Length: 640
Image (cartoon, rainbow, N blue to C red):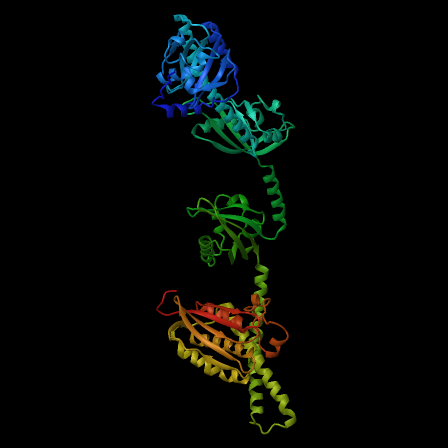
């Protein structure tokens, strides 16, 4: 017995065989019909569809044989595959290749064999369609031709079977996608007839699958001609629009419609895929938002800054009429009508703040004036949080409220404080001067029983004068009337002078003021105002330090700035007071702070002065471990 040689393309042939997914598959009637027909045409008891694997021949279909497979070295079919040609053996006992083959010498006692190779689409021989008899015999030309036709049909069925499996898998995948789409999905033919639908579509429209099938989408759309217009537009690609679908119960459902053509490459249009997203919840949410916004004072809005610099208000509540005198519709595509109503003096700072917020994605917060067409100038306050959109656009979500009443109140308060302060200053100066003269002995010796009362009166008049001076400073700062003479200043001599000026006050509290070593440099500042701030910080540090402690004054240049710091060793600042520390009249409590005295205006004035000089002020403090107040001023000759 001789074994069939291994074909030169064996690896490619085996790969093609496995790709057909035939091996070890269940019996299939279409192949059993072919083997039955082959046996009948050739008048043989056995007919097989045999596939030659690496180690075996396996029978996809068999007639007249119980075995499911045999070893490859015994297979007659392996010789036909190796030769890639029809093989006929009239009598195996007369053929040296097969006479001692166990399949010849024992069951099934093969004598006659005729096999036609089975080829895939690329012409690779995968196996044979063969007929077998236990008696020697010979095929006539008709039988041979019919066996050849059946072999070709078998190979074609191999390919069709694989395509059908792939289509079934794809169909199952498509159905799974439809069932899990999370949106209503309809598969339509070119005329709009519903071929398939998913559960969401059936639930949305209120139809059973059978009721929905064969419905036409134009019947379901409320707007006449909408489907036809979408189909025309689909010639250039998928289309999306909003519309309304008519449910089975007659309800009109707002939806977002997405229509995509179904077309295989190079093939005519097969139909359309429609995805409908229910917008009912969005409409309900919009109505709820409108009702809520209508109850809020002022205006709730979304402001969109496009990449090309244009802008609009995609959403604005009805309050826009009260704030700007516009309607939401007027600014939904172009913010120009609203921006034109900004007060000319305030418009530049509003636009600059928007640009900064867009660049840094920081919260936008502004107070500015609006020229209302009916109510005249209004003061408004706006806050908004920015969001960067994928296309480079920026969308703010925020609100704007009318603060005209608050501004009028602040103006009245400032005018009252200013008037009272000026009116009190002159008589108070005379009183303080007179008390000073009396206590100084200018009018003779003061009786001992009056001495203490006069000293208390003089101390309180000085304290009241300091309060009035602070109130006048605040008034000037708020009104923008305080003048600043910014000059390049040598910092070291200024710090030394501040130390000398405040040393007596520190000694009164038995606290030592220290100037730490440092590099001299120049800052841009107003000397008088900077001395005022330093005096306030040093006085506070000494006041809140215990006897025997020291206060450190230092200056360190860094990144175009000079940081001046005043560090004490006191009790530090309570956490709940930190947010209010630079507010007017802010004092930590009614205990220790009150006992130390003070107006509660010093830090508020210091903050205004430093910021007017282009600087920054802040502090670092841990309760129980002291505080460090710092201020940054621009260093002369260095770009911050």
